[in-house]
Length: 549
Image 1 (cartoon, helix red, strand yellow):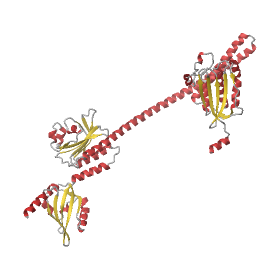
Image 2 (cartoon, helix red, strand yellow; image 1 turned 180 degrees about the vertical axis):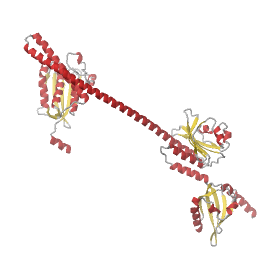
Image 3 (spheres, one colour; image 1 turned 90 degrees about the vertical axis):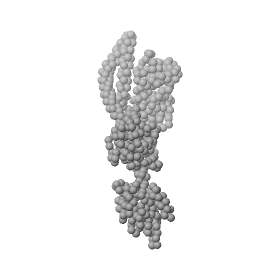
Image 4 (spheres, one colour; image 1 turned 90 degrees about the horizontal axis):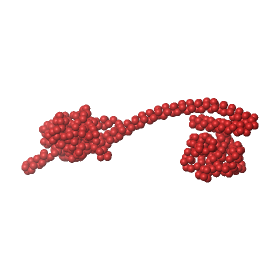
């Protein structure tokens, strides 16, 4: 029987957990296994002192752990729980305690159980919790500090660091954060050749449990630090690019359990993701700053250019206004005297020359007027006064004014087919100017026995469309594209037809100032159709009702 008890005792004392028995009445351990030396540094006999368990409990756990155990024991319940005990050297060990309650005649009399050292597991759990809960801001250094500290604690390692490639050749590493014996130290650069880090970056999860200095004799850093064990993992981006590594090292052999081994890989994944995000944000901020600078510079250039353009426009307007006055005065004198001279002279030859002078002077006067109007358009000084305008009267006036030119050119103008008055919202004087321009062009660029037809149509949305249709030679696609370019005469400059090439530009701008549009549709050798669209005039009362509806 004694032999069997000895075999049982040997089996229990060879287990990796610490067996114990405890007398409830005396509040003393009656037996503690030899594993207590490895677990806490105390000999088994030292555990037999009164209140040893309570006196060596971690201060933060003492009150609740004793209360919990007393409650379970009073109810006769077997139980298990985890708490911290203080070792002989003052460090802390996490214990998973499994307790069986032994009953006597009057209730619980003895406790027995096993204590398991779960310190490494607790460190790993703590690291995982921190890794999951850590909040990352733009301060990447704080994130790195937390990570290296928790990596070192999870593996009970003396050293831990995060490193990124220091150059494009990827031949060296620049540390981002270094942990040495419970503190942070300055970063540094080191060459990779002949180091365990080089193996890490060859897509290996490297574990050198011991003899690290012997396995990597060319790594002076390991020798200087006295590193005996090494564990590292590469930093890999979402696209699969390796950008650096993380590692933990110690001056003693490192014991890496099967459940703690993946922790470093999890840290490396999180660190790689946050590093990639941070670097992307840095590039974005840099690009935004450069863009802001370019926009600021461009804005300053545009302001300067706009000021220069305004200054030039003002100078041009002032010059044109002055020159217009200086030119119009002698031209009017020339026109007046040539007209008087033609009435006083009976010489047919002289009168013919006077007529030529009169015609040329009027053409030059029209040119000055067109240039002034074009200048006002360019500078935004063109003014229109929108009022109720009788469209029929405007067209009839324009036709009457150009009837002699039409007759002289052999071009027939149709009667305006609107039988009733049509009222539009426009500038009366400017609308007459536009109609004169369109009808004049329809006559000038027509042929003998040609026709000019004027039509009027009501459109939806309260608008009127006026069409000037001629039977002239028409325009091709390129000519129509350049139709509204200033001083573009579309080939007419090589004919004897007079013109400045700005009339249509002015007409289009005037119509647009009246909230209308001017368009053209033309077919070579068949003629052209210039169409004006203007809003109908609405009485103020009707307009107000329409607005309220």
